[in-house]
Figure 1 (cartoon, helix red, strand yellow):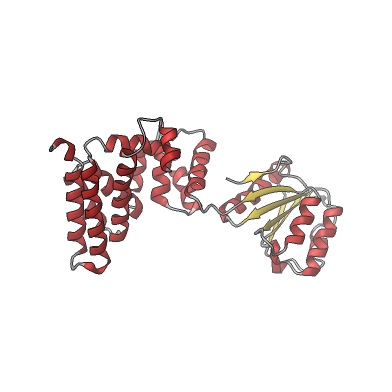
Figure 2: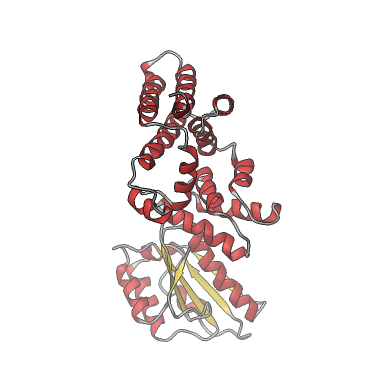
Length: 330
């Protein structure tokens, strides 16, 4: 989600969009253009790269028009502007033209910091567009996308979407749009699974979930389907390892605890605590140990330690599913 300063009029004389998340930068531009065209449908938009804004170009673009038309001037990669052009832009900050909105897209950082500082000092409206490198940030982005549409999505659905799509915000935003358009009512994890089970991450976690729940036949079916669609075996062993480790972590946690407290202690989102609690009912400490050994063997097998990666994975799935029912075998 792009974060904005308190001064949040899209038609402010200067908008500064700072960061390296392309989707958010584009949305910052779209917001200004939409506001300008709402005020004047004939708004002229000039979208320039840094090398297209030469010394004197800004003065030409912002000079009074015979028709007094509204104009939006967008400058991308403003951190790469030449020194002479930066002087022009800084001078413009002191006397911005009426009916014109200047939008500067700046990557942030050290390069071009003088222009950044000058824009802020001049009181530019600022929109933060940071690169979202953390899963928690992408999860917050997905929640925000659903919230903006006025639709409800469960925490499990939001997490499943992040797990399935990955780190590309454009794909995440597109997935939210598709789900909102196609699905009525609350969007849950099952819906996301139906739409995106073909993704490598989603199908890998499907195998792991069925295995740690003791559903061997379903886990094997999901495994064979995943491998047939080109999912890398290492992704599946990784998902299996995460599933078994989550069981082990929660089973060794102190007391019953509320999901929120356990989430902080174990480094898991609260919704996952509830899911793992359901999955761990048949597990014992010995079962966890046995499953972890099976995952380690499978990992070695798919990384060159064995002749048949598929067999190594099938064996691990069977062992994990059996371990999931170890409490009932005593």
